[in-house]
Structures are given as C-alpha cells and as structure tokens.
Length: 111
Length: 116
Image (cartoon, rainbow over all chains, first blue to last red; front, side, top):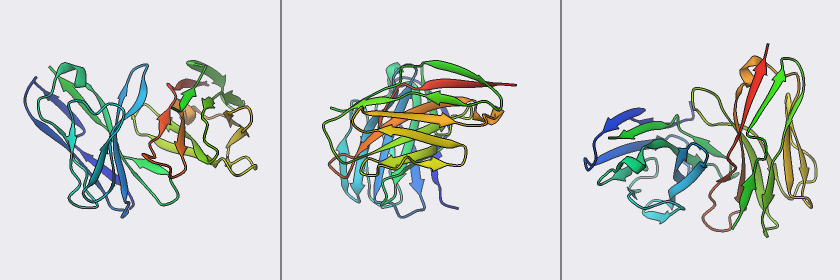
C-alpha cells in the first residue's frame, strides 16, 4: 500500500530535550516536505527536499532541522524544542503529477 | 507571494443536500494547481480534488466538483448529496507549477458540519 508514515504519532516532551520525528514514504517520491498546523493559521511549510541531499527552508524553518540521506526518509529534528513548537506536524511527499500525499500527522506538545 | 482565502470559517448543511465552499486566491502565476483537502476529526489530510489551471474543464470526483474561474481567481467546491462522513475541515490550497519551492499554500479552512 502506497503511504507516508510518521512516528511518533503523539509526543509530549519538555523544553530543550532534543527530538526527532521520522517520516518515510514508499512511493519513490522525489519531493518531500514538512508542515505544521496551528489553529487559525492553516498549514505552513517548515522545510522541503527536492531530492536526496537537497533541502531548503520553507516559511517557518526557525528551530527545526531536516536531513535527506535516503530518498524514502525525511526526518524532522528539533534540537532544543520550545513551547511555541507545540503543534500538529505533517510530512508530505509528491508525485510527478504534483499531488502531495500526507502522513497521518504527529501531535507534539512541548512543556 | 501567493495567498489563499476561505471566507467561510464554518458552514452547515443537511444530509442529502448540496453545499458550496468558497475559495479565492491571489497569484501572478499562469500555470498552477489548485486542491481541496479534507481533514476529518482523525486529522488525516485527504485529497478531495485537484484542478490544473491550464484546463478549462472543471474537475469532478463523484459527489465533489469544483467551479474554477481563472480570471476571477476563484475555486469553489460543491458537495452534492452531503453525507455525515463529509463532516470535516476543508482546506483550499494552491501550488505553482514546478516553479520553485513547489509548496502548498493553504487557506485557513472551512469547518463543515453535515446534520442528520
């Protein structure tokens, strides 16, 4: 089954404790991205990757890092999480026809 | 920069009736894609329908159809024969056609409730 998976689905952590949210897709998509969703703000892009070893900032990259060492994986790294990073996070990957498919989301709470 | 506006924060409709969700966008691009995504209480983002700007014909997917007015920069979603399972947040989104970052620019969403 074609899908985008994220782990963990739910995470509660404390300020400053490094964490990684994994994202994996099995569709051989070149383009992957991370979004965060906040009430009243819709979804905003954090980072994206056009291919292996090619990443770039989106609209709200501060406090986040990413890497793309393999085509299927695109982890999101929070080196020192803060409460303003409490949000719902989505990973997405794109087909050649430009339709993006989303993972199930990761609910992150930073205390 | 592109912007997407959904002017209806909330809407409701009776089961089996038809409802139209509004979306307008602002862009100077000529080639782009438009999407409607559904987000049910499970929070999963589900693609409902997509439209290529170069196509004049409005996209249709079963009970879902769009009214794409390129000159007016309008992209409304019509849901026919509404079902209880259509209750969700609906997001309109815009994406340039392979022009750069290719991100989706989202509206703030419309919360649709289908009443029995």
